[in-house]
Length: 413
Image (cartoon, rainbow, N blue to C red):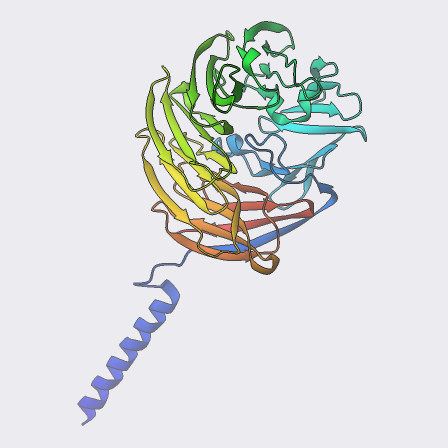
């Protein structure tokens, strides 16, 4: 009897130890994905509204993405319209620049360059972070949109032919400046066909050597609808057009150029209710693949390593492999009231974070893993038109018009 009691006691003790080990170590259990709010930052001035598609030079918030890859601490850049704030991960102010009351500013290259535009005179200038003027531009209305100016990593600048006051006489020359502001070369956009100068979207390859432009061109001899989308590909250093291709449809949606111009990705459609497609071209202008997508795109994102291209519409997310040109995964939001607003990718594209607007004004953050599975759905107080994900997929930064920026800690594994 004593031996039975002792045995039972030993078993109970072992079970207790094992139970405690499970509690302490989580043995046999996989940690659940988690998105936790770790910092609420209140700004002294409201930030600008929303994102600027297709590139993000005028987003309300940015992070030092390239700097993080080099081991720097997280920096959050906030665009207040006529000023910029640089914050650390704790929300502490580390740099501040204010401009004139009639001036707006766009941020380039991790906040190292500013494009400052006067809203009354339309004069513009490109400055370094330290306030040194690189280039002055007189009465250039195209600078009111970030798509009118592209800046390479070495400080070269490309001006697109955008002129809102003279749609019948667009400026048809691409202008290429060196980093001192000297006009190096003008390239012919072959744009005498264009309906108007502002109907363009452009993208530089990450290293700045190749330029893709998509526009709606006018075909006066056409028996059908007179406008048609056209994709142009340029050598960004010489200003020389390498090739152009006509695309089905007339609405221009997006263009992306991967590193060294290896892939040129474009989207075009025949209208808001039309057949929306995504096209992959190689450096020589050969069509490699096309995909049908679920609705007009509202944003396109390339992963930091260029391996993944993502595109979102109001109800769909599509992820593509830029090497094979194939679809990796897609997700459809089935809840009628919820629509996607913005998207961010980790460096390798293995994690995707999307913001949504939903029922009764609720806002949400979705997190997807590499397989496209929705692993986190979390309600958030902010309307995430400006959304950033650090390259290591450990922090999510979200903001909107107003004075609030939130930082989340993300744990996948």
